[in-house]
Image 1 (tube, rainbow, N blue to C red):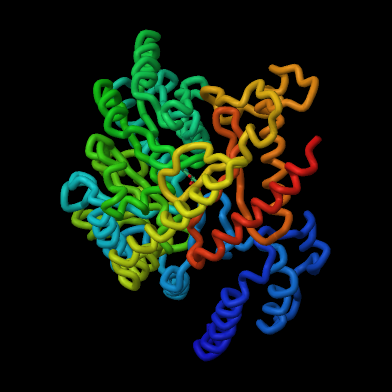
Image 2 (cartoon, rainbow, N blue to C red):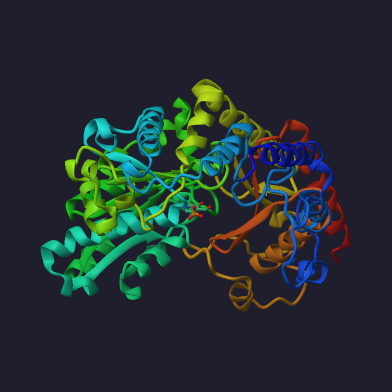
Length: 513
Ligand code: PLP
């Protein structure tokens, strides 16, 4: 590593990225390449002799950029964003520039101490109850993603209970979520050895705005106890993946605490909004939970990856995850006065992610971060109003944050409406199941064909390359998701996206028999 050459090449890459951001709107938001595009364009074996960075950057421009879906484009309204910022990107550069591996305090004291400090800051910003903070006996750690945070807290809860009831009873452990909980929960439960039959997805309905119903949870727990099973863990969500629904944390925690069930609050997307006083009330009840996590990389400008997890009982986490080896022995660890974050996560090695979070918090300040979140909420509200002004469309479910779920409404199609209602429960119900329930003899509006129309609308608007949105199926209804959250998004992008939706809807509705 030659420092002078590093400086020269570094400038080249920063210039390249600055130009990329200047012209990001010129690219089709969703990549238009065909599968295999890179293997056709690039050599099948590595070069034997070194190549200059200039040549490599040329190839990035020619072959890599066209194969990117531009997540940082202001016309990206898909999934939930993973928003980048100058501070976040520079923090990443510092992180890899230092190249430290802070698995234990001694392996890089500043990495550990900055992480503890920044998690304490962020905990204060979220007004997390004191028992989640180091100053109150708990503590925070940065993981790569929510799936990892859930695996680790599940392992902590599992081992805590198995110490009481015996390891041989692992097959009796039951975990609870809703049919709207992120799919990674099921994977996490299986990874920690929960029997697949013991994962309960409580049905949600339109009536509860797809939030988990505490009485359904109570009944499910009661049934399991009657069968001799052991309720272990509940995953409640603030801001579900499909529609940003909010589970009633306080009521769910009350049910869980009667049976000593570990409650994890997954606020992967919406947690960032809770730094705003306007939204903090949505996590009321978290004081009764055992752990809380959110992805700063979604809506808090750090870029991937940065999942912030707090636990009240950090000893439970360490008991489940600590690793010991002769090469890891050192005096500070034995003094028990320091944190060894290797014992709070799955892997041993870890990146210095706290740097970018620290840079983001310091470069923006709490006031501007709040303004930034609220500006996205305002833009989502504007989009929601535009949808509301066109009677061919409807908003499918309550907008809680900066996500609007909408569709062409059945009344825009139908001569005769057979079924446009919401099915209760499983978001994974597919169109074919719904179609099977009806006899379609003439143009009528069934849930199936209104879903097909909206699916076509989404494909057409994404096909233009001018914007990118994704979809969800909730209660059998196909909804187009318009998620506002890109760092560079402005009102003109939102208005443009809506005009595009309307234009394609005009054509689709005109073409219908
Ligand atoms: N939980 C919720 C509510 C999410 O919306 C998502 C992703 O969008 C996840 C979990 C998964 O997060 P990760 O990819 O960080 O594991």
